[in-house]
Length: 250
Image 1: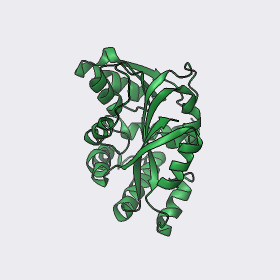
Image 2 (image 1 turned 180 degrees about the vertical axis):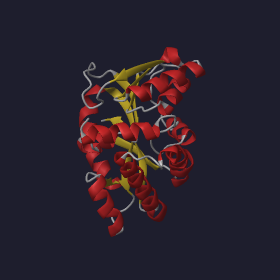
Image 3 (image 1 turned 90 degrees about the horizontal axis):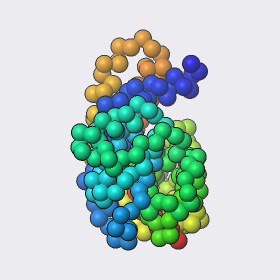
Image 4 (image 1 turned 45 degrees about the horizontal axis):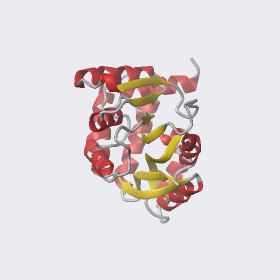
């Protein structure tokens, strides 16, 4: 198994059993959905990079419409299926194991595209270009993306993310990227920092405990990376975080 694959397998292992594989909050997601007034009665929905399904299950429950839930991890999709069955929503969830950047779906077949904390795998600009053709006329995309909250960001933060995610941009830059990709930006909403700690970092810390004595070098390396990320956010959470971009096909 090559090094990158071992790294990915380790990331998945440390995140299994968690409700979320990234920062988010169901209450905040519901608030954002409440702002959207233009969807058809039975919208065609896709959750791209769905993980274990926090977003997909929320969408299925709210709209009572089928949700195409896409992720590259079979393990995450299996957890999603299990949770959907427990909630009685499995008939509304269509799990799809594939690359969310290479979807061969019919053009214009998505009324509501949802993606939390996953677009960075393609870069925000890359995700917008890949997903725009899938959107129906007047379709809505809600994408959360790691963003700088201003142009005045501490050098320590810029240095860290230049290494970890060079494509990170400010909210203003991402708005321009969305407009250039054929979307109208209806709103930008910052995920509260509390959601990072309560719903992601806190549970992830507990999940990592059994692995702290592992002799696997990859496991130790990933744990160290995650803790560095947590420490950076704890010190600089006012300067960056996840912003939800609510977009309409222009």
